[in-house]
Amino acid sequence: MLGYILKRAISLIVSLCLASIIIFSVVEIAPGDPASFMLGINAQEDTIAALRAELGLDQDKLSRYFSWVSGMIKGDFGTSYTYRSPVSDMIKERIWVSLPLALYALLISTFIAFPAGIYAATQRGKAGDAAVMGATQFGIAIPNFWFAMILVVIFALKLRWFSAGGFVEWENGILLSLKSLTLPAIALALPQASILSRVMRSALIETLSEDYIRTARAKGFGKKAVIWRHALRNALIPVLTIIGLQFSFLMAGAIIIEQVFFLPGLGRLVFQAITQRDLIVVEGKIYFTNWNSQDVKVFDMFSYVIEESISVNGLPEDIVFDGQYLWCG
Image (cartoon, rainbow, N blue to C red; front, side, top):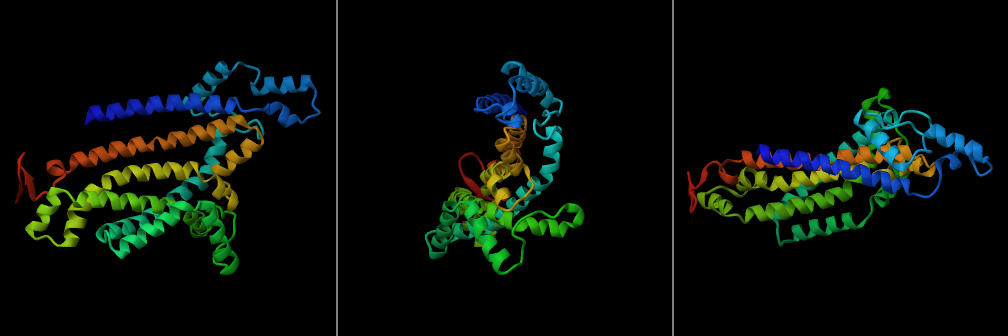
């Protein structure tokens, strides 16, 4: 187990290093000069040169890369060209919107996907299975911003249960803040719930076909006991990895949703930085999001620990494998 965790930790470090190179290279080769953009088309060359020197843009790209990486190691993501404030402070301020939004959406997605996936697996080949799979196909095919606009029309404009946009600060009440995040979270959660329910269904169907499940049924366990006591635990192993992937996507892919609902989160921050050619903010936000996306490797290690903790190679405690046969205890 220790060797596996060490291997995954090394993979995490290598991934972060490669990500820093790719992010810096892609952002830096984008056309346009931030200094020229900030000063306008009528600015003098000496004024532009002075601003470039002030922002550190007159250095060669290799020096700027190592300066950027060394700063990030110490927690310094640089200073915004436009707002002249530390990027790390801007990220800290905006993450209190994006992180709760991602967790809220992930919670909704899980609560929808688990019952739907389990029900579809137990109704395999029947009308219930077909209905769930049809609904999930619809959820996957429709983009989340389309769901967002429908939710705004129905629940904000027609029913007036929620506001059409904006965010109530946490100091004004947790319930009010969560209410302002509800529609965006649902819009983000629906496509992810569709994917997760399909993964849950496939994993559970595969687990239900294992020999030890048939042995448990032969021993006299009921359908519910077999599913909830034996099958579901092993079926959750691949689902945990998918949840990690979805959390990364929700943190990184909420740009459009935050624009639709006017949420002051990380997605809107990077959108504004792109339009203003604030490259240091774009690099810092993308790398911060990439760092969070590495939680997939953490989930993978967590799944490995869970799998190793399951007794007798994943068999229920009262079913024993002697290397050749399954025996009921």
